[in-house]
Image (cartoon, rainbow, N blue to C red; front, side):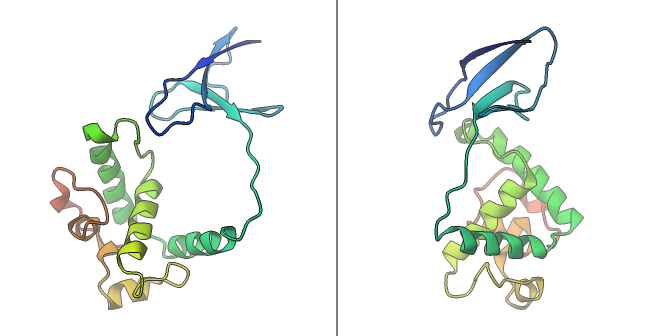
Length: 167
């Protein structure tokens, strides 16, 4: 196997740590790790990329973030809500200003929505303790994707009015 590494196209937010990989002698779409290099396939472009392996640093911000992530996914958004977020991601990626910062999955949009809600309502929303019952009782804007967009938690996209499935 011969691997040729070349610099990947960098967006404005990219730190230039990724490189494009050109495989010779098969192995197209290879993903995995070799020594301190991780190979993966970009979902949007289909290109094989490589980056250095990272290690998590133990710091005081990890437990609160981990607890918040566990709790927002413990809500278990409905399949209809997830499909609305998948459609939203497609519309979001079509906006020209998002060319270099695309979202890949519905969970990217879900995280963005929930953390924007925490920032917009600091005394009312605590992601470490949020529940589905609290969302319904307080009629929080994350109840539907449409409400989240209207509340300014997610950027406005075309035809957002149709995404009204509840969490």
